Image (cartoon, rainbow, N blue to C red; front, side):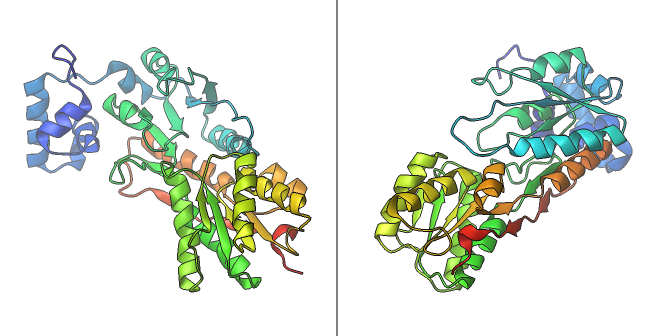
Length: 337
């Protein structure tokens, strides 16, 4: 922060040795704090001359009845359209609380683009975040400005972050998929996932490794990290089939489609010859008969709205986020025989 920059919520929290939520409570819900904590925080506020963001305060008044969500463009070459399921339920659920969803766009190179305009104009009551992968700054930026929000996705960069969030247990989903293939008699099960920098991908990979370890099956050279691209997965599948892989668990349906293409090129049949399970249960999975891990996106949306309602009512953020369990949809691509 430059010398001329005004103090923020984080400035006060750091100097007082408390969380940002505690500073927020000192300003908005002082009865929740111990007297000595309240005195210390108020003293720091006076010392540094912190003035709460007026627009953020107005956001909590709920005047607009709108919830902002930045809508990102679909990625080319992928099979996923998960946001459709999430958004539909989000719209239905917010309607029950008297709110509506306001979608806004932004510069793809600037993850914060669009937020400041809405915050300053008090055009929305709160935000829903959906891009919480490692390195994204939206959550910290909104917290610094005391703006209410709930995130779909855990705070990968800071597991101790104190804000409301909902996520799906990706590791559990990969364990389900791997256990299913083990039950089908496969012993050399490959994993095709994203680059090491993807926390979501690495989380899902741990589920595959845990299931294989528990079954005392080998994983050496069977795991791959690559881009979420069907052609990259096709080539990786060829390599692993060449060293004896008889089944694959994939971090996405996009990658699973690449495996299916590799099988076609080899004259092999999914399920009968090589087992394949994707992740996300996209429309492509349903059309192609691909077994896939299904995220409970409708339940995620309902929980996000519940937390939004509590946040706008002034309730403190939960001590821990909510993690929901996925399920496995079994189709022909993974059933032997």
